[in-house]
Image (cartoon, rainbow, N blue to C red; front, side):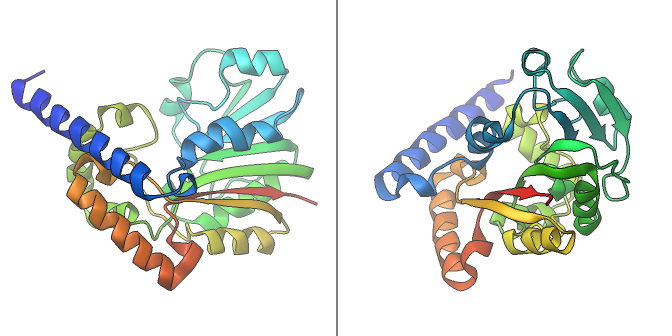
Length: 256
């Protein structure tokens, strides 16, 4: 690692620590709760039980359930991704079955007890088609648990404006760990708001059982003045568009 890169990462770490400290000092816990971590550790586990037929939509190389978790719970997990390469890079035993397909046009077999869709819907160009596919994939009584960023978040707007090459260079330079996840793939944020997802779900015959909003992400923490400006903009946006200003959100849907 070059001296410049070490200095840059050191600068980032100092600013991240300062941003976290200021947030803890000024804001309640509910505004500092990480949506993705809460989805993984708290929300989704509530809806998992032994012997389920699970569809992991867009998990690709990183299925939600590890091979050990899958085996211990007796889950039958189908991985669906548009990229065959991503699916082939998944850990051995991570999926019982792999399907290479476009979620927007996938014809679901109506046999899923549980659909997991984590940080995937922002990457599809037709979210209405994806929600239709999720509804078709579920068996009667089955649930879909979704996590996604909100289109109205500042980072999402910037993502839509910046050229792909520049975005990836900045992202992986400032957040090296993000090269290992879903980050870096082209994003569309088509209808990715709490209201739109709920409306699409109802149009496809799904009941909205739960929706939780989250108000924090790490992107602007790398430069504390920008982080403070972002918090101010977020607060003003909330006064105007209320829950549509969330940073990320989760939705639990059920097929009657």
